[in-house]
Every structure is written in C-alpha cells, then in structure tokens.
Length: 153
Image 1: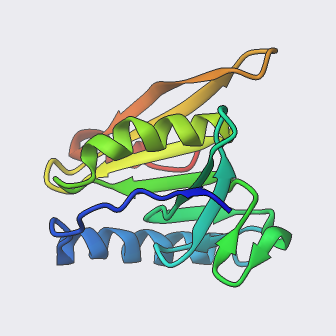
Image 2 (image 1 turned 30 degrees about the horizontal axis):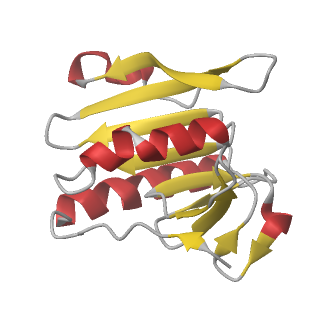
C-alpha cells in the first residue's frame, strides 16, 4: 500500500502541550461515560483517503470517536466526530492547512485548534455542500474573557 506519510518534527512539543491534551481527555472522558463515544489522546491514528484518492495517516492530539468498530489496533479507518490539535511551532502550519483540509474532506464535525501560549481555542466547523465539497469556517474563538463559552458544539 502507498501511504502518504508526513513526518513532523516534534521538537516543539513541551510539557504544556502535553498537559493541554491530558486535561482535555480527562474532562471529556467523564462526560462521555455513558455514551457510545470515546475520547482518545495522541496515541491513536486515523487512515483516510483524501479527495485525490491518496492514502493519508494522521495522529490528532485528541479525538472523539463514536464509530469504533473500524478499529485495527491503535488505528481507525473511520473519521472521528471531533478533533483537537494543540499548536507547536513545528506543526502549526500543517495543522492549519493540510490537516484542516483533510479533516474537512472526511466530514469531521468539529475541529479545535488550541494555542496554549495565547491561551486561546479556535473552534472550526465545516460547511458541506450537496456535491460533497466543504470548507472550514471559524465558529468561535475562546479566550480567558469568554472561557465559559468553551464546550463542544
């Protein structure tokens, strides 16, 4: 199989980056306790085909998946409902461009980009047309001033 792998330098990963992921998973895990959905940290991967038919593998920082029957080991072949990426200098461009486009193509419902340095969360939703194409739009930016607005849409 021809998998289009993108090796990303994780040199920018920090304890703060990891803490954001752990805190999110801990908070959401309790909320999903009686649900068919599960929250995962950055130890699972998703295999997709992009709109050009290329095989892609992504490892989100956090995801919520309600379709867990497509699992093979730590790999899912079905799209999660939600994805969160925590920015680092080495991954920011990829998270904002290629990954965001791939998540849109997979019709993921909600995408959060977390910048722990700025203490902000950008919440993106995807608008889909009848022909199957879609585009991301910024639904809301959450900062310290409106942190009570931070919840899954």
